[in-house]
Image (tube, rainbow, N blue to C red; front, side, top):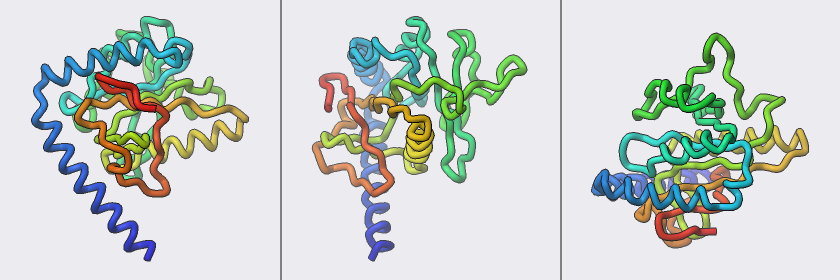
Length: 219
């Protein structure tokens, strides 16, 4: 019975991803940029962002999702510590967040899978600090991507489980240090925000704490 339920969930997620890919493919670059600018303004105005010190933010794909270039620049300009995702094991869906040291460092990052820029594990001959380091300050915010979200704060990822696995490992690490977990902030284009219950979720799927769209904040 459990296997049947898992199979049905997988099919539901695949169908929604296919539908969302088609929807996002029809959006022009100008439309995505216009929505991204408004989303960025809303995020930067949030008290949670303004009071944060350590922020992780995804680096966006060239097309089909919110452009985060304005967000990551704002994090650095404000003197906050910026971390960005790094895939460590693509087959097993393992990633960590690595620290970025300023705009020059950010601009120098090479493109990886799906055209997403990723830091190398070392910079200037030294290992980059990561969010999972035992002596790292805890993250205050994790700014997350996704293919679709709904008004119950459910998230549909891209299908490899990178964020769900990281968040489970990170929460366990923080709990061991008696530290609270960060706020999970999703950035979504208007077309990616669905009605409650429309995103299928399983036991290991994380919900977010807030969704920021171009027209609204969903909490």
